[in-house]
Length: 125
View 1 (cartoon, rainbow, N blue to C red):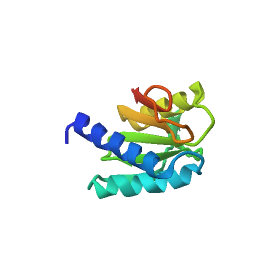
View 2 (tube, rainbow, N blue to C red):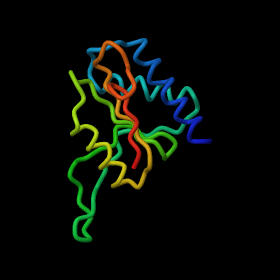
View 3 (tube, one colour):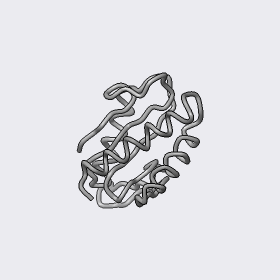
View 4 (cartoon, one colour):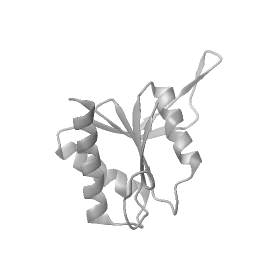
């Protein structure tokens, strides 16, 4: 599947979850609903994937986890916070670098509207 087609489906699933649930719930709630929506589109979805890192040639597990990985290529980092901060963007960029993936979306569901570059942010490695 082309990356543009995949990201179109992912974004539609994100909007569908937001439309049905609205703001104010736990991240785990949005994650479960988004997994349901993406799976209904016959996309391969994995969640809570451990993200170890290499330090001086040693593989270490620090408890980092990818929220959702779609089609083994796009990372989704789910938040339900008052406001996204640079640290959230840096977290996703770090996950992209550690995993070798090129594209991710940072989504904050705790907002009145899902707005590009504010509560729905595309990050490229």
